[in-house]
Image 1 (cartoon, rainbow, N blue to C red):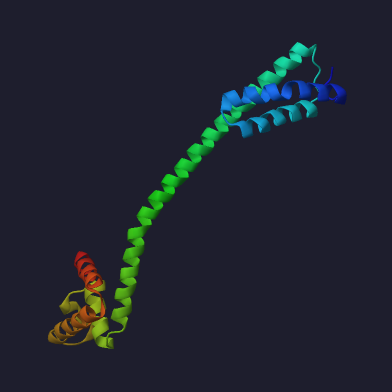
Image 2: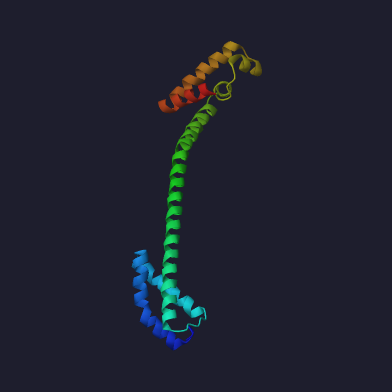
Length: 180
């Protein structure tokens, strides 16, 4: 008997389909997927011309093919669950890693915006001192102004920033500028 013999194939399908579905279900514990597995087994049987010596060999083939397909399904499902778990862990790690970075960048954006809104020389001196980390003497030399003018402009700039920035953002700015 060949698997391509339509009459025999129809008989085999009707005779074994339900039993094979039940068998697959006992392996994978998911009824909906058991039907799919058995349909795939019958589809492979139909597509692959095989000659079986007798009905016992055919039955052995169907049960072995169903068992292997069910085990492959479980293996694939396990890999899928592992991939999903890994993806969720990576997303969680990425989101917790990004949150502080995003917050920090937003704080810096607010600080830079307010520094750029300071009067020209005042903003330049605050930027050179607190962002670039230059000493008062270096700033005075670069800008060709007195040391006292640098100190006065820094004080003025910090007072203006304190009024324009929230207390939290201003505190973070001071904290950051002392780390540089």
